[in-house]
Image 1 (tube, rainbow, N blue to C red):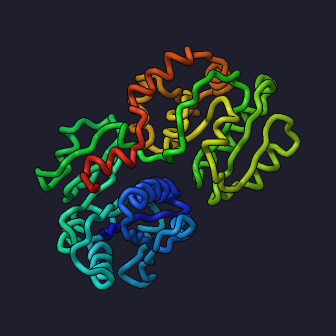
Image 2 (image 1 turned 120 degrees about the horizontal axis):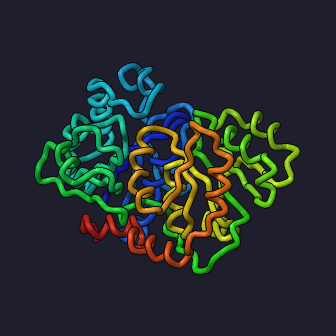
Length: 353
């Protein structure tokens, strides 16, 4: 069995897409011993090394005209031109034989043009698209957010026979993340606002947390590998007794989460990991998409959103001090996410075994 992943990362895209594909690929390797190959571009600030570090093969698209453009470098939300998508398809066809078992594509720049183009290589194209704003031609469509109805998702599908996986139980995070079983004292707070943090929200947040009202808390701040404001953040906090910053990759988040009592995070993968570990994270959304995807979780009181358009000292202090019934919150989280491995749930649905 051969399985292909098409995914990218960069200082604009971040590492979220690659990380969730790696979680799925690792589960596939364990269960099916499949031959897995990732196809990626070599974009500025990419995280392709993470794929190799997990012992998966990576094929890099050539850096030449017709394969890359200013649009790709400037934004990862925009749809890529047909020319670029078709040139990718031609490159893939030269590299691969037909009868690929599954092709997974997790990419905001690719749509039905790309997906139709690879159909002659496989009869099973799986799209992971958690925004839901583009047309797709695929066999399976994964959108694990609940802010979009199945009816709206169907409007984006050209093939009306497409199976839709629209549930939190398909959330792709590390299977090592497990629900904590005991209540903590809410003093150690982990902060991570993404691998790039383009809006420099970490710095703005720490300006607030330097206030004497937060002295009883200890903040551990992870700075993303592509964050260009590390020196500025370091200079802001170097004399602080309760704020420590570091810029490195955490190998085992499961063990790390056991040492903390809550998180302040952006609306990406770390938010879901925090929820799955039993926290009610404070969330600072980084873009309009994260605002939409977190809206359902805010309504269900699974997360607490922090607004930066007004004075935030009292809001953050109140949220950190709020002692929501731990066992009630844990029960709600358990029901909502159905604590099974998200990757395994996808594999079972696709009947890959």
